[in-house]
Structure formats: structure tokens, C-alpha cells
Length: 301
Image (cartoon, rainbow, N blue to C red; front, side, top):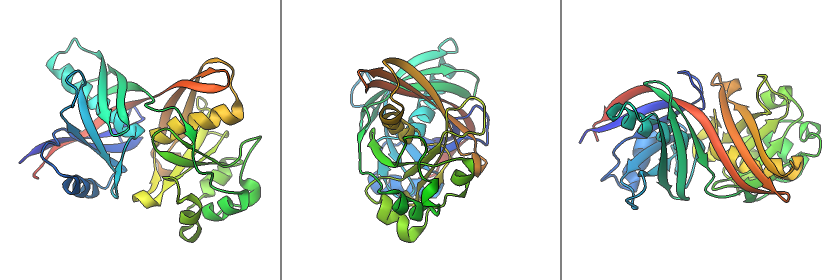
């Protein structure tokens, strides 16, 4: 059976940047093992399989696999899948350039707004399916520094310290002093799994940044998922809303941040984070970004 797929670069508006994503547009009839094998074949951070929605009012169901295992939720697969499905609709109805899609993920239904910008690209924004909650802390500065090959004095800035948050996928968050420190960060296998074994990966961030528009610069390491480093991690930025709320304590109302990631990999990415605060808590949040199709083909499986 031939199954159509698309490759998109996500959290970028230009090809060969951002985070690559494979979307298999017809996943019907594939069992878990076959989906996992196909994801390993693509060997990208994530591969999405589109299935018919269980709820007839929803747009589609999607399943998300890294090369090593399935995830209940992820940001760049949600953005990329929403854009490619909107492009499919726009090709059938050229006047339909803005739309709302409801994607069924393992974490629950995710509402996405999409604007089709070109024949191959668009912009999407989605509501977080879960508000960030505390997850396992990575540990003290010495332990975290050892896991990332840094000095303890390079861990933390201002009042930010290592912590853990979960908005569908749990991450350890590690603030570092500056761009020089984040560039030198590397997972040390003998210590990394011990320090970050209770979470999906380490999201390392600093307030120093490369570009003029971002509020934070970040890297994400998840060797346990088969991802040595991820160019752009929307699910981590979703959970990062909890970090911002805890340490920066923004006042009530809406706040918008851009997080730059992937620069050290030559895959510059920009991830939008919107947070609505009330009485010191995150009451709503959204992730946004661009995506562009760079390849299309068919699987003979």
C-alpha cells in the first residue's frame, strides 16, 4: 500500500532551518510496531501518523513517535501537522486560508488556528492541552553541571535555578549564565541519565540570545528518546511557561515571548509562547510558529 507523506521544517518560514518533521497523511491500518519502525526509518525528532478522528466534529487524530518511542503530545508535530492539513484543505478550496482544526492527541484534543501563507507554508498557534505543573527537579548545581559538562558557577542566573515542569511531557529546565556556557553544554552519558532520568530531557536556557527579538535562547537534549539534540521543542516551551511564571512572576494579563533554539545545530528556530496570568498562576497558554513543506513522497508500506 502506498501512503503519502510530507516533510516539513517547523518553527521556521524557510526551508532547511527549524525542526524537520515527517507527517504520514494516512496512518490507517498501521499497528504500533509498524509506526515505530517507520519513525525509526525517517530518523527525525518526530514522525506523525494522521488517522480519522474519533469525534466527528474534530479534524483528525494524530500519533507522534520519536525514533525510540511514542509521545502523548509534542509541539512541532502539532504545528507542522496543523499546517500541512490546512494546506491540503486550501488546495481543495483556495479561498479557505484561515481555519481552526481540532487534533486528537494522546494528551487530549488540541485546538489549532492556522493561517495559510504560501502554497507550501503557513503559521499555526495552538492552545496548551494542559497547564504546566511541577515535575521532578534535576538536582543541585553540582549534579546538573556534571551531567552537562559545565561548571557549577555557570548553572543559574538571577533567581533562576534548575527545576522541572510538565505540560503534557515532563522536562528538566536548566538556566545557564550566558551564550558561551550554553554553547559548551553537552550531555555526559555517565551522569546525564542519572540526573534527568525522571524527565524526557534537559531544556537548557539563558536570557542571552543571538537575535534581537527573542527573550530566551535554548537547547534541548534527550538522548533517551534517540534525540541527541532537538532543533526546536514546542512541548518543552509549553512547560517552560511554568518556569517563567515561577521565576519571572509576570503580572496578571497576557504576555508574549519568543524562544530561539537550534542555532548551535545550524537549524535556527523561533518558538512563540503566549501566557495568560491571573493571581500568580498560568491560566491559559499557547504555542505558535511557522512551518514549510520541503518534500513530499509516498511510503511503500
